[in-house]
Length: 204
Image (cartoon, rainbow, N blue to C red; front, side):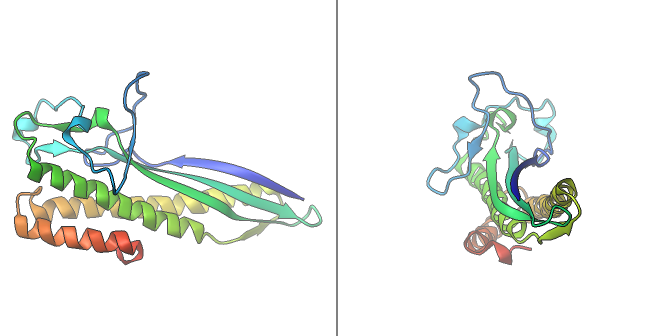
């Protein structure tokens, strides 16, 4: 006997302000997927600039989200012992234009490059998370639901850990580059992130 289950999980609305996801009005551009061939541009930063933006160190903020969807394969030979594993995983990295903003007069190429690297770093951890979720163990239990619950819990635990690390690394990136104003550090991070995109397992 075999049944398939589909589980959708969504992370915290991510970064840099750690905002929660909103319901978008019909017709708004809600999500823009990361794409190596289509870099972000200032037209995607459509959010309202915070009232205190003039006092902040950053000239812009990109709001990003990572989501995943998993399907499980759960089977039993005798109806008493069940075995389940992850059948497939899809993980996506997107930015939300309506929650991303730039201070008027500061939409400069260097600032955009800094924000692009934030998005690239998000993609690094999307790839890393996908690899780790696919490695989730096979579980055995006495019921279908027990197996599904264990798989859900395992994926959620892995996802939470990876996303916390991503949040930490985004903070380190901002700190070490002084929000993109340090050219040497910005260049160093460009190299790091490019290498991690090739092999995300090397990312911390």
